[in-house]
Length: 312
Image (tube, rainbow, N blue to C red; front, side):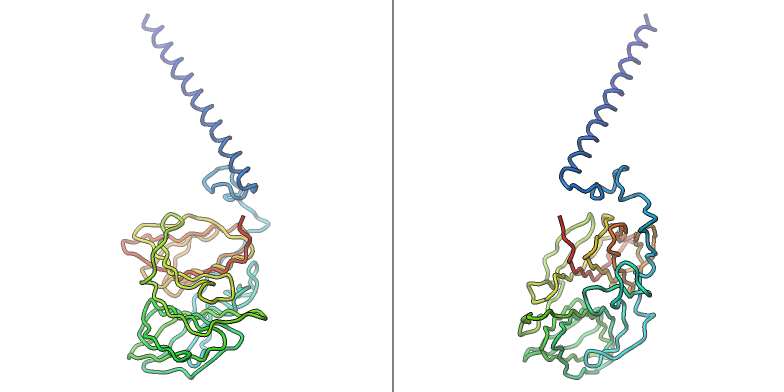
């Protein structure tokens, strides 16, 4: 009698496991089909799916990501924008196969790091065919443009439209340290007539990609010619973002501006990133990337994206 009961119990358990496995498989197949139906592109399946080509090797398109990761410390110092000591982080080149480290910009004209030394001032400067964004990493100063002046400090972004004369002053005995982004303007574009000054501390935070807290600075609504946006992204202690990739037309840069050394998932590599180091996402759709805060303190990046890609 006992043997019969044990046998019936085992048979019931086996049948339950079989039904459960079949149910799981049916559920997986239904999710898979609905995913294909929704996106009509198997590369957009969730990255955690074993069947997703997103996590497989692609020897024909895999690239060396080292040319897309750079620091200004390796660049020659040049004088620009009225008197800033500037070093390039990224320069125009090939966004798929850069001829040299950092030469991968396609849409914007320059992405530089700059210093203005103690108590120095820049010469009044204007650019008729370019617009410039300055982001203050460290220091204090003033900016003047078009009859307006503003105090600036860490966290301040300054947008200078084309055709507007401007100048900067460092008002302290320490460096005024900035990131400088330059965009060209198309024929027929009408620039705004005044500068825009914002602090990311005044921005309402948004959230995306699991752990990214975003503080918007500039977009086309502010007068930019390109479909670009700039924000400060922070990650709390032991947080990280969802790995994902970008396709042709998305020019995205993350520059580390605050915090201890972090870990970066970049393609098939794990890299260490410190303040002053930046990376630009390759535009081939096969380079997953995400930043990880592996420390007990918050950290921040200056985020920039120029979206010429066609999002489905």
